[in-house]
Length: 176
Image (cartoon, rainbow, N blue to C red; front, side, top):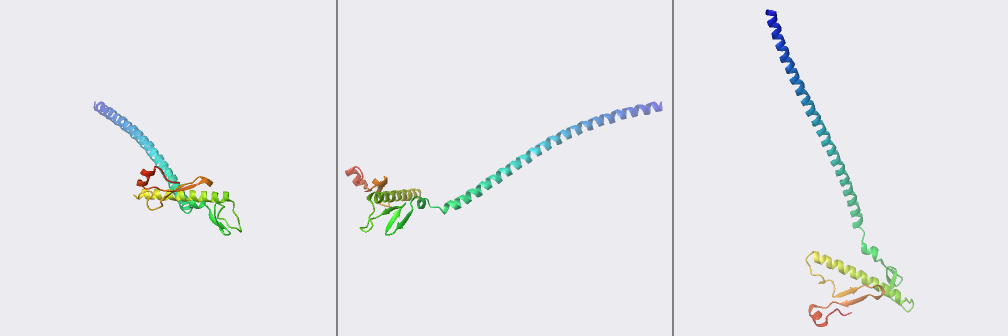
């Protein structure tokens, strides 16, 4: 009897231990599943971090390249490239067209007119830039730069005096 009681106690204890073992296994499976999800999430975060670092490196590289280009472009003058002003003997030149005429060195009027057309285009461009700058800083366009208007039309360019508000009312349009 004593042995049967002891055997019964051992069987109950064995059942309890088996239940505890099954509970530990279930918890272990849940912990492994949580660990797997955590590792997957960690892997995803690391992948995203590497992607962000790559994008940051790319943007930094592009920014450095843009700064180099800006530095190089800041030393370039568009007007100097578009309007090459120099001299040829006694004559001033703009884009290779001579400005002027001498009895000893005649220049065709077509070339002189072309040069004057280039000058009108240059002055019109400078005028537009100055007026644009004046507008950005709060100045009045047309004030302080010139009282003339340029109409660059190649060899047939024109220059006209700007009319004041009072003159516009009485005449209607600029005098060319």
